[in-house]
Image (cartoon, rainbow, N blue to C red; front, side, top):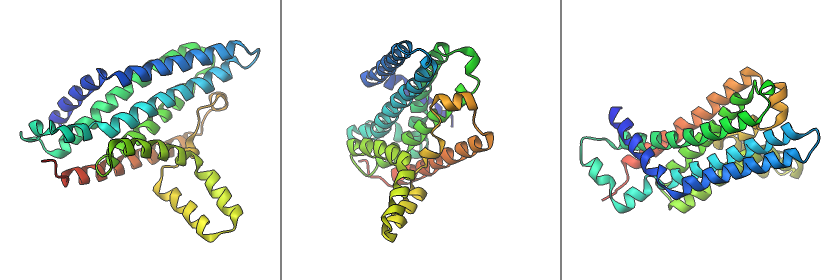
Length: 252
């Protein structure tokens, strides 16, 4: 495990030097600034707009970093065969993969902590009792996307893996709509496909709390715990499959 942590720290430092990460940081702060400006143009909706746009900015930036880094973190080292320098030492592929994953989590945590703290200071401190729980749910969603794109990068090209990551994010939010339209079509095939997607794709729509309503009303903690179990279960499944694929991948 110590070797995985060392690889994780080096991965974090390496990706901190990537321009795309700072583009994501700039994008998130640009969207936060835009939400502040839009909120000030209204009379009674400033907090609502700031919360809704702010969390959307956080989620978009995390999605961008998670999908891009997850798609490229191992594939670029396999293509250049730089990973052979580490794998020639007494380091298993599992520890190598886990280290890369940990390094990207550190990268996401930095972005998450920075943006969420800025948004928290912008909001009224009396109305943010649920803010960090909502923000953590956004971070866990990005963790699912990171693990998924990391897994798919072992059997498709990185750009396709990135597209898959964005696609599963969108479909995971559209599952309820797809099920509704399938029921309206009265087609058993469409109904079956919609139900099947609910079992093979994370159900992001069930835990979509990035709005001012949930900041005011709160979240049922039982549902919140089920969200954590749901997301972390998908993370473990994707990591298990990624490890299985990586251990059988020919990189020479």
